[in-house]
Structures are given as structure tokens and as C-alpha cells.
Length: 82
Image (cartoon, rainbow, N blue to C red; front, side, top):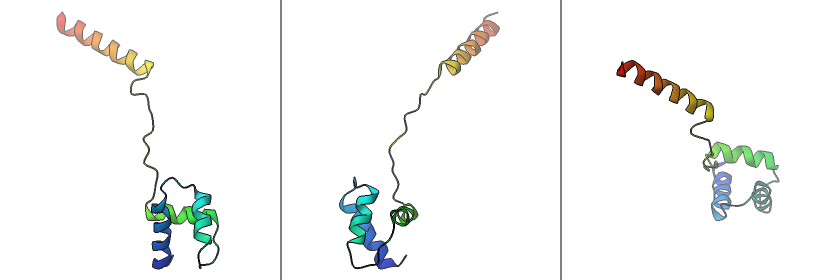
């Protein structure tokens, strides 16, 4: 991708951070350059480093892990107390 095209795509992305991929592609294709597909836009956006940074919600302690920790602590207490 040419540098000028990449700068143009960056401006489009930064103008509206919540824009969907089809909206970005429509804005990009409305310009003077040749028409490109949504997949091509997506690939270049990923290459440029624009990625979603939303955190994923993960349970810190599952029931199985917590049960194992409790067993381990109980054994440690028995071994050290006796």
C-alpha cells in the first residue's frame, strides 16, 4: 500500500473510532483511488496496528482451581501444624 493511501486510511479511521469496517471501506472508496474490498481494508488496518484493545472478561478463579488451592492450603497447614 502506498504511503499516501495509508495516511488517508489512517485519517478515515481516526476521524471516527467507532466506525465499522463497511463504513470505513465506503469512506475510503468514496475518494479518488480505485475501489477496494472490505477484506483488503481489514488486512491493511491490521497491518497498520489498529486493533481493538477491549479487555476480555475471564474468571480469575474457577471453582476447580479454587478447590485445588483450598486442598493445597489445608495440606500445608496439616504438615506445618503437626
